[in-house]
Length: 203
Image 1 (cartoon, one colour):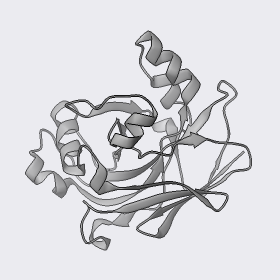
Image 2 (cartoon, helix red, strand yellow):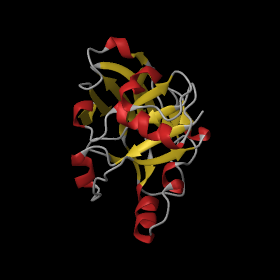
Image 3 (cartoon, rainbow, N blue to C red):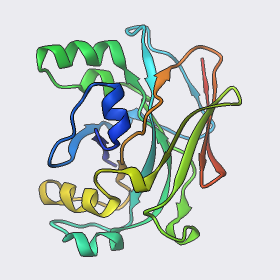
């Protein structure tokens, strides 16, 4: 399983982290060891003092593909859910200042919690999906897929030009504004079109 992530895909989030949008998707990869199943505990790592959540819609690839045209890309994912791109922001900021890769800040163990998947057919359209995150019962982040700079189909097509996508691969599609710090004792609940699909506790 490969875990692909798209950065800078929501304009207001780009403003809050002072990152400009690019003409093509900004992509990075988390290792398989970053995966954390739903209803698990996430333990804050000792190497960072600023670990933050980023709530994202996640696509699951349903069959192998390579060099897919955008108009056919929707055939290659049939389920989606919410995930958390957990980021060691202090480490990422240092890497950005030096022009270095983000891997250590994004790819550490269990930095990609993933919720329960829903069939794409549950939604009238994938281009207008509300999602949100609550921490300790209070909503802290909300977004909608219609605000994405690059659509699901554009993302799948783009990645497939460079890397063969295989069944079970996951794609995190970007986070909206409202990212923030995680603390011990936090209970995170993610909602997709009003339905809870993700629950993680911070230890």
